[in-house]
Image: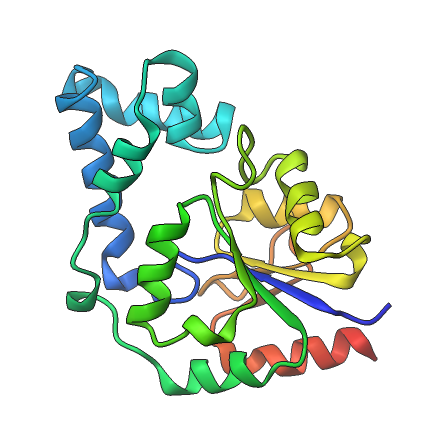
Length: 213
């Protein structure tokens, strides 16, 4: 079946992981957990790892176990001077812009952060919309319910019509099991449990063309 929709992850996918943005976000998660929730520093790394495994994100784990102001958390962890770390890439913009499929951001971050990233990268007008952590609440990637909500928002009745691009193998594995054509954005050259891998958006049109043929 032809591909009619592409779901793009945001952080460490639309920009290089080497930018350092995600490290800053993780550092601010740790600060929030310590200063606002009183969690000892030495417990935070293992706690975040456990929440990621069990709930998909640190946020969902904190919501389950703590009285959390979600908006305050999201605002704090994403309060980063993005323009100091992200540089627009004209080639990436041209490639994404010219793809004929519907294109959505599908992220476990919030829409405000996604909008700031897209504006900094000059990609705002490349996407039909943003499916964020609040849109799929109380779920998140890689939960099946989050994927189902994303399909509904995108107006897609079938996952087989969709490509999912993400830098996390847990997400691409889950998406593939649900019928998405999944692309792992990575430098490894190994798709793992995904259908394909991608390390340069210049290769994306060829991948889409191959699927459609």
